[in-house]
Image 1 (cartoon, rainbow, N blue to C red):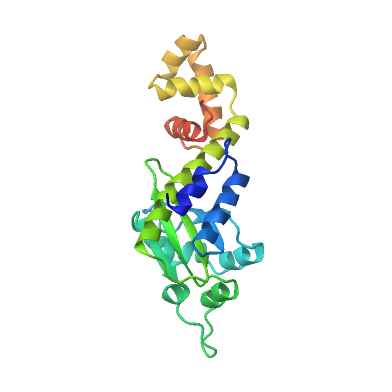
Image 2: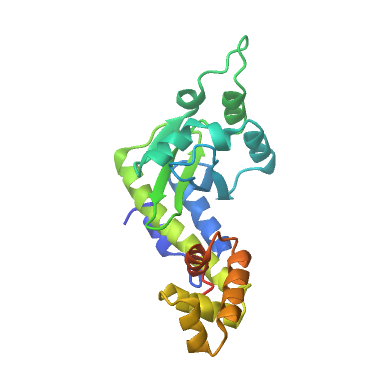
Length: 237
């Protein structure tokens, strides 16, 4: 079994983000890297959105400088990750060019000073609106096709494990009342407010209020969106 998959298989249940972080550190070390990260990839049609760092072992000062340079929004990595599910190996010179004394290159200088000389991003484009990427970086500036294949498989497992961890956390922190959950569950089945009212012995007005409140709590734009968000977050389980 590939090293990355063997490490993930050894993570004890119930999974949590601490154990997952330990596994990621182990995978990074096994493949010659020092840093790991998980990003949310913005939608391909959203040109203004930036990547969101979800999990990493990046130093806070490095992350602050990275954000200040706008690399979560303007890095060429984003275009590559939006384009499709192909692993993206990189080195600092390829991404940002050389840092010359007479022509300072802030992104290249930042990466070099923090040991980000090369690495690989492994995108996972899900069936839902969520797209993510697992990344590793360090002194290593080359990676074989076989290793990328192993890490790509691991990326699916890592993002699935992270989703499971957060799903359970969300269930415990569910902001919806029992009635709001009932209304959303029935709306998920295609029921109208009138039909939901009949089933739950509530007025149509009361059902609409529950759905409006639930929509606001999950920061959705309408009840259809609220159903999708609530289900994805585990609020309807």
